[in-house]
Image 1 (cartoon, one colour):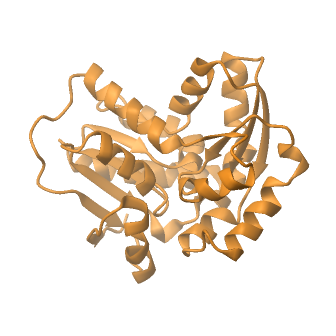
Image 2 (cartoon, rainbow, N blue to C red):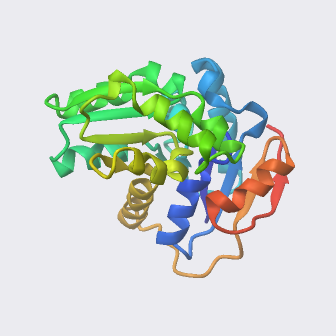
Length: 262
């Protein structure tokens, strides 16, 4: 049985790639909701609807687990999906594993959050961190240009350097000791972000943390696959050449996309 993963676009492929590296024998079914991207400027009600439709599709593909590889959908669609199908298969979001890891390490005191407008406006990171460890101070900044910039392939160049510097120099992020990349697109610019801070701020890569959490959950539920799979499957709700071209950057290898309208 495969693992289902979805995002509004290709950003979730950073999570899929991390899961593939740590669990190479697991088959992945990935759904990129390209017809509705970006999720960051959609209403919570719309994001819930998209999440439910995609979750039901992945369930119909006999998935044993669903990973919401999108911070915005994790903020607004996770509980609705758990209520809908959570009694049949486990549903994992990309927020809770990161917060658990952050608190467990006990070395973070002033934490910055960068993500889409919707994720930041939800206040979900700040509220969840405060509920577990109120001593950690959280400073959030919406960075709406980053995801579309990355989707279009603009990173590690003058354009991305300028945009990243403009955001990270915000007074809202002054004197942070760690930074959560609260968007699954952002691992592709982790190097640039680290260079901006000269290595003095701990950059938290959600993809790797979520992949380890998925492995631990599969082991705990005795759902780990021991036989080689027959190949991953990738679906999009709207096909574009630019999307297919960019997938290698995110997943690390060429993939074949199938159109699935939901």
